[in-house]
Structures are given as structure tokens and as C-alpha cells.
Image 1 (cartoon, rainbow, N blue to C red):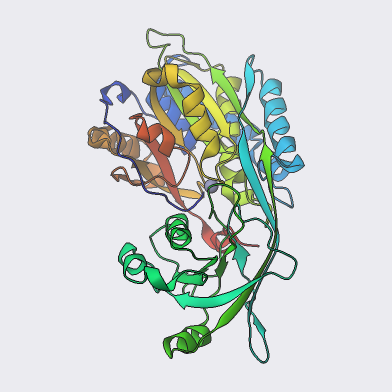
Image 2 (cartoon, helix red, strand yellow):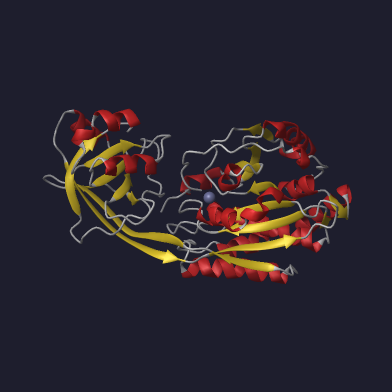
Length: 423
Ligand SMILES: [Zn+2]
């Protein structure tokens, strides 16, 4: 899950076609496709019982998640990521899906090997825990040294009024709701040579994206540092050295796609259940998003195992490139432009955790469906909400921008959440 980027509002489309029976009782992800697709055989509560029994008795979720949770993560275009793509492909074939596709696309992939940010002085002080931002190229071996300008929250107005001060400087801003990439671009446009984002006191630096394409100006996230801020506020000129060792390369990862074909009068309509398979390299990428990838794999397995024949076609998609800017889902929407009007819903599963909330984006008319689904899945005590068109932090966003009704799960991530996007 990357940091949010500004949304482009789509033209909302009627979601009336989504109404249908929703009777899942136990595993929410089983409930959602059952709720949205209708089915021919087995039907309704029978399908619920069979699917739930299948998951209760024969779940492969944990084993699959263990296989996907690799030290070094699953950064798109790395051997780990290719192993993960192959693993999902092989499991789907083993589960009996007749058509499993690899859909390749090109993207700039990126890894950071070392981030060293040093406040120069006597003695110099290294800011422990700093993390470079995506697509920064390696600095020269000695790093880049420049004076720091503290731009505070780094609003558009800050960049305007202090534009003259930024040339040749390292721009420092606070982590806030504005995106890192937007403010990085604002700094570069005004001649900055480096960029630092400082976290609030209670949060460690998290990895994420910076440049859109490989760029030499170093960008990094640093921990909160009250001493540095006080010295800058007092007007002391401070020079910082940024030394980054990174890797940028043109990668060709594959989205993995499998289908349960619809058999009814609405068979042409497609419901997509998606999750990104890629994940950052600082840990095992188990939570973000091994958990979601394994969850939809188990959903696919169970629905196939019980012989469920949906009315509408259910398509499972494991996206790559999400962490580098939703690149796999953007490529998917481009590659499937001709059938977008047949995609009646896209359900995105990114870090489901313990699901607590059903979210829809922009389509107010989905309120009734969400309410009915939450009622049908009463054991989960789900909240539900339509949250407008600004929720674009994951792979539902490229579909949302095309007007496809999109749903997502928001869950509690427990103690593991503290490891999100961290080393
Ligand atoms: Zn994610």
C-alpha cells in the first residue's frame, strides 16, 4: 500500500446491477463474491455452508502465506517476486483453474541498499533509521552535501512564498497528509538538490515512493529530531550529507489472473477480486500484502473446490507493481480497456487484517448494498461507508477512476502494524 496520491474523480456509474443475495456467514472474503455475483449451483446458503466448511476443514491460507512471506520481500522484478508469481500460478493450476494467465507489463523497479543521512558538524551525527524514497538513484560515493531549508509542513503556499530560498538546498518538510511525491516535485522545480521528510515523534520512517522516474536528487524519510528542528528554528545554518545506495532497473513483472466463469444470464459481467502480490524488501512483506494475496488465493481455492458456479464471472487478479505506484493495476486497466464497462465491481484486498469496515468509493447508491452485506455478515460487526473518490492508496484506484464501483476492506492490523513498510 503506497502513500495516497491525489485522485481524479471519475464519472460515477450506476451500481444498481450489484444488488444480489449476500449470505456469507464466516469468511468475509467468501461472503463478498457470493454476495455480489449470485450463483447457479450450489446456491445461497448451501454455497455458504460448503465454502465455510471447505475453509474450516482444509484451509491452505496459512501454508500459502508462509510460502509467500520471503525474507527480502517481493519487489516487482526481483527473483523473489518471480518466485511468488510462479507460486500463485502453480497453486491456481493445482486448484483446477483451467485458464491462468500471466499478464506482463513494463515498469521501473527500485530497491534501496543503504541510506545514510548525516548532520555535519563537530562531531557529525548520523540520523539512525532514515529510509530512501523510491527511484532515487545512488548518490556519488561520498554522498551529496548541502545546506538544509526547513519548509515546515511544505504546503503549496510555503513552496510559493519561499521559492527563492530553495535553489541548491536540501528541502526539509514534515510527514503529513500531503503526499511525499507532490512536495518532492515542488522542491525539484525550484532547484532543490535533495529532499527530506521528517516523521512525527511517535512514528518511525516508512519506505515509500518519491520520484516518478529514476532521478539523481536524493530523497529520504528521517526520524523526528527535535534538536535539528530547534537549531534550524534558531537560524543556525546546517549542512547535511545524504549518501544513498540504490538500484533502479526496467522490470517486466506479471499480473496473475484466473477466472471462475459465469454461467448465467449475467455471465458477461465481471467481478474482480484483487490483491497486490508485490511487497517492499525491508521485511518479508507478509502483512503488506502477503495476507491479502493469500486471502484471495484461499477464496479462489475454496470456491473452486465446492464447484461454485457463479452467475457473473469472478476474476481473481494478483497485481504486481503496487508499491511503486499502483503500476500493475494501472497496466491492467489499460490492457483491459475494452471490457471495463463489463467490470461491474472491483473488490480490493490490501492488508485485510481483522476486517472491520467495508468501504466503497464514490458511489453513494452502494449504501444499501453495503448495509445489507454488513447485516448478512453480522458476526463481523462490520461498519460500512462510502468515502468519496479520494481513497486511492491501493489497486482499486485505477478502476475507481474509470467509474468502476470499487470496494475495499479496512481491518485492524494488530501489533504487526508497527512493522508496516519498515525495516
Ligand atoms: Zn499494500
